[in-house]
Length: 602
Ligand SMILES: Nc1ncnc2c1ncn2[C@@H]1O[C@H](COP(=O)(O)OP(=O)(O)OP(=O)(O)O)[C@@H](O)[C@H]1O
Image (cartoon, rainbow, N blue to C red; front, side, top):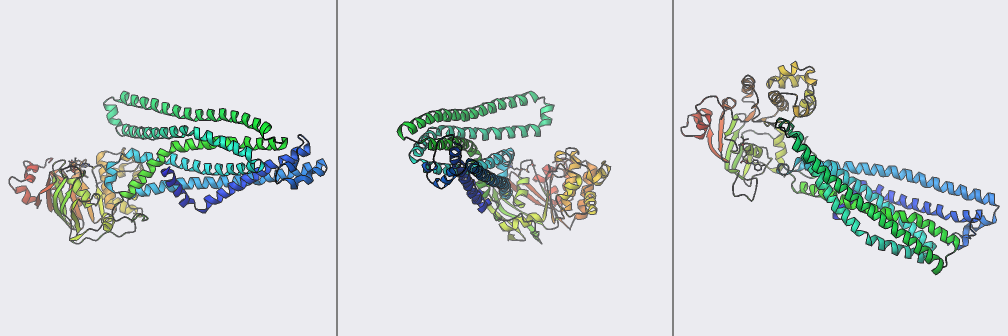
């Protein structure tokens, strides 16, 4: 229930007074409804169906004048009053329902935005650990279940309020009988608690199944090329068949719980009504009119009991989703990036951090797993001078990308410091540092949108001229001009309609359009042919002295123009210096990476 109260608290904070206004409205509707039922007594008496007197019902004595009026007048008066009551009640009900929808949809958006904001503020290592499909599931399936649960919760509060009024009325009419019925109702509720427990257990299975479905399907579509090429369709289909059997079983079990509980309630209610009538007639000597009214009230009340029970079961089945979303929110808060304040927006207005001398790592120790005895970065110290071109080279797995992640502030050192111009980089400066950087990884992200929209995603104010300039820099101009819709060509999911080299050139153009003072290329030109690669090299040459460039590459041709080379091996910096000096150092790692000094892969 802790999770339920967590979101109820959010609901309270989100909707504030309106929520209570709605509850008071419900109370009022309950009263109007009760009054309409009470009116039936004089109606019955006037028509003469049952010889009942208003005096036999407490508080309705003032209606006795109706019995002295001519039939047509009293009947018309009662019916007019009844119509007015029902009309007022329905109008109020309509307004409250509309307000409820507003609260509900607004609350969905509130939870969605809050969860997404917390996710965006979480640090990079949080995302490295998480399965992407679980996060998608949290923002889709679980969010839906949580907001439906919150809506059910609202409905249940309304239902309980309404039921309490009906109980109040019934107590007023005959407290011993009402207490008797209430006692039976509570006993049945207590006996039905196992249905609630079972619903909760099944809710946990639903969350697990939903997560595995999304994870599996996402993996399948991501790897569709491999599935088709290796003829794995059959095994993937069987996986979905197995999953379908499990979900069918889970849905059936859930329906069984709900139907069993309804069956139990129906049997119990039949028994209760029989006992009730017997007790009313033989033990309590209840009058005909009063008896009819109480029966009427309870005929309306009992479905509310079953409704509350059904609400409780549904709520219990959504509690695991509440828990999953609550834990995700708390985890994100605990792993918020240092220097980011909770209420903060995303630093878009922050100015880039000025850098006049160098970006440095000093005696850095880092490991992905704090329980592992091995460090991924071991006593790493390096200096990236401003406006120079620095290459970071090393064998696969040496730690190059980890170093770049450290420079970007995506990961934090266990020991050692990151410094800008000799001063420790403060947590609140990290966002400003990133604002001065354009980072291009090997497998960059492109939106399923036009080339123009992809470019504008990094700088919404860029002019068309600036876009073409950036594309000229990255040698993308020719292929974009050759496309049927030019800049407005849609490039498919993750840019699938372009070749690997075209994608890389587009991503490079996008990086340049941002106008960075630091450009980081992490294997960013690996898919380019030598002609396009040399064009980019010439473009980078033109930027020399104006921009700090960090290049990670395995190809000799990509780093041959670097002012400064840092060689990494097994998480340590083993050499650092000018390209030419290192290339000539006998027995040095760089020389061995270059091989026979041929422009070949390292
Ligand atoms: N998220 C991670 N969790 C655990 N270990 C990781 C993670 N990312 C990288 N590593 C490990 O850290 C080491 C350095 O990886 P890194 O990606 O920095 O190497 P790299 O030099 O960039 O390699 P490559 O040239 O192949 O891209 C490797 O042993 C790798 O297995």
